[in-house]
Image 1 (cartoon, rainbow, N blue to C red):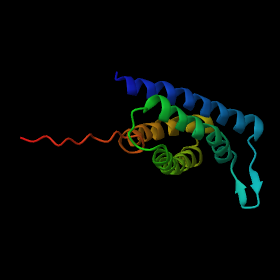
Image 2 (cartoon, one colour):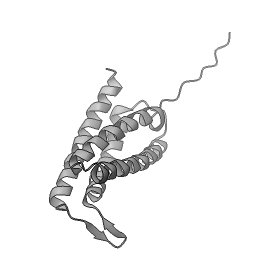
Image 3 (cartoon, rainbow, N blue to C red):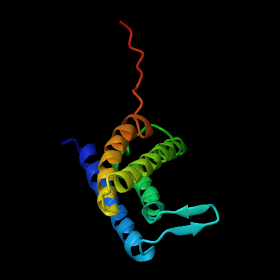
Image 4 (cartoon, helix red, strand yellow):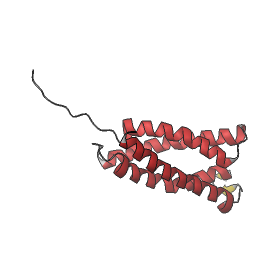
Length: 145
């Protein structure tokens, strides 16, 4: 297994376990499986738990990826952060769609739905981060024949 893949698995796995743990605690104990009413409307407990866990997993995920998994990226930090943010926005959309699908259509328990959703989103995220967010620019050489 390449070192970068191992680092991604270790850092991403740790961050994912933290995310799922926070999701579980939020859903079961903080929100007590209750709908949250806000000035913008009602938010289901499984979606609110996702939003709570995301507030922790976003910054920790970015920092782990930038400094441990993809330290060789030739892109500037602000470009990486912007691209990471764009990827996260897409991942939020994917999380929302899959959690809603698994819980409301397939009737999965919310924590199980979160785990299946995480597997799908993490696979997409790794490929996108490697090829877009933290990519390494090819070094151009001016070799003459």
